[in-house]
Length: 104
Image (cartoon, rainbow, N blue to C red):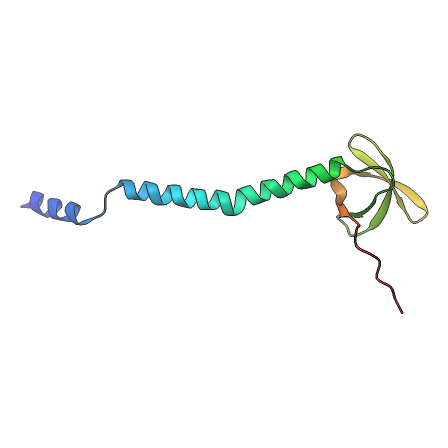
């Protein structure tokens, strides 16, 4: 009698491979919605940092605006006000391409 109950319970459920399909679909969604866009953004940032040259105006991750004085392998010499400071390339958040806001 117990075997009959087990057979009825197993016959009514979905096949076991459907769980693997569901997990695989979730992994694909995770890749295309999270991992791939983040890696594209990281590659684009690395390309921007590799193209930095003397004279470029940049915004640092701290929010400071600076002008690149000279470029070394991993470091940049930046003009901040009247002084020149040394910073890592990774401290650069973006190029300062926005026009200045005019105050009246």
